[in-house]
Length: 269
Ligand SMILES: [Zn+2]
Image (tube, rainbow, N blue to C red; front, side, top):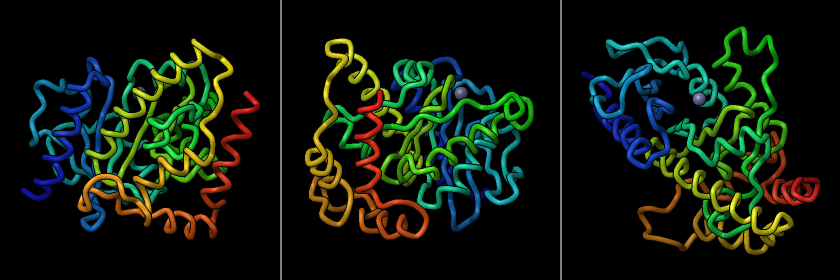
């Protein structure tokens, strides 16, 4: 069978999000893409993480969205994943969970401001919040529209999806992504921890200040980009901050302006 490595990686990521307590029952799914092969692989619908086997993972065409390998029905959230892979070219993995603290922020319809360096290590600014879906969007192609409101949020200037690899869907929960499915799972874990820390911080001090820009830059850019020096060479992220900047100048604002927007948004809250 083809796509063995991709299916193995996606199986492992689904087991990880369950083991980390991010997706109790069947509240979540992980997928991975092989862009050279033009496919994505995702957990089957309603499958129990404990019973899941690598051969159960369903492979679909990225362009057509049709199943090309696997006997089971793909996750009901598959249309959301397809929309994100098609819109965000730099990503190779997506994770959706209903992890408690990130979901609490989504239900409260609050983006997560960057108050500390733990957040800055993973997300270059606030974790954005989508708008609510309309009645029509919910009744017609709900899962696809869930992906569309995420893309709309990023394309309207919330952030660059590579620099901020996650979002809160209003009234629903978090989606994270990364360069592969394991990276997306790690970002799901980081988002849950950040959501919990920020909630505790704001309980202690509702007026807790945003992390200063210079500290946000220091922590994000020492792990990501051309000047990154954290960790070992082979684990450094592939995407550089310069790549992000150059791509954004064509379609959206550079990263530095997103950070300015982040500060403004925080002050408005
Ligand atoms: Zn969900």
